[in-house]
Image (cartoon, rainbow, N blue to C red; front, side, top):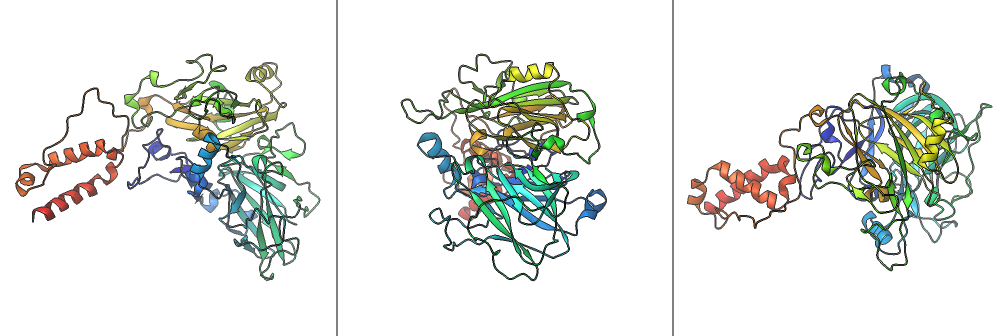
Length: 567
């Protein structure tokens, strides 16, 4: 279980990524997460295993700071509204993944939900036929200023545009980090992102639509996914807003004064665009720090896209459907057999790879545990390049263990290469906006463009960096930053679960003592320590070595059963 937005300084084992920071939690076993919620703001928790997030294993994680540390406390009266938006399918994510990668199924969601609410009927989407699930409802009071916390828990390629009829949003925070307020007519949010905004309830008492429009795989070319919620003033009738109740044409908000309001975080647009406020134009209210005051010590160019390569795990020879392979630097991430952080002393550099250790990956399929080493205390710059080689797409990237400064974002054209971006950088054509650069942990990259981020690598551990679209990360669009040396990382907690391959060269010696009929004399003759050892050995053989946190209960249970059998 990942605590998205928490950096886990001094508690990296609680980050919740299978085979990076811990073993998977097996069915019937227990893992208790214990950490200090040190990063305030609007965050979320979600499963980091398979397609479980797409099946609803997610929720809001709100960490409220003291009022003295809330930069915007004087700007709002009420802080009680959370909007958790997610693209939604009506089959489980595992089945949809298999249908798409092994058959003819699509990878596009037909619906979205707002706090679990929202009607859907594919046969009647443009009619007035009532549908069962009600709209989400947010009650407000005229004259008050309300703070909304927006969380995008999406799992497929479905950015979501939000606006409010007759109301203007003032964006005040992103990914838990406060910014100078920005007036917005609408806001685009990508999977894993969070935004806080304030809305003044300055309209007549009535009901108003909050509109959600799906983009990319959810737009009018494919699924035409739209959803709505109700902004209900106290005293307004308990009914829907007086307009076409089902899926009218989407329009941006009417501004409530003459100050211009623009879309924030527009799709596939950077600072080159004049009709959107892109992320680098936001101004952080957090003090400048090492990440944007120092020149970078290490710079990594990370080119990515879908490539026309045969992924042996999913391609079937002679099959008419061709699936492209998502990769970073032409490498598919293969997760190791055991978790990197807690079992790091079992590894050698031969367990890892990156673009400096493998070759010819542009022309062949390369798969390995993609790890990039960075020195503790270095300032790291990542130049993320979406090469745009496949089709109009968009990838939000999330970094575990750190926030980063977003210092540049531009769409160059329909296609671009890493070498072309390097040349632009050499001739001074890329401008980095360093002063008060916004802090985020999830950011998008324009298709056929680049986004540049910087972070201060002061949190030792193994931290995954990945596309936050589940279908993409599951087949390799990820890598791991190893921050610091192994001996600079926090010690492994006592009793922490371990796991890995079991491949004996010779047949294993079977445990026979005291495992047949448990008579009284056998129990009395066997020390408790030996029973514990046998139980642990049996647990290893049955893959229960992931459950040491519940061993004590299991041992007591077995002893209790033995005693009952004897007496």
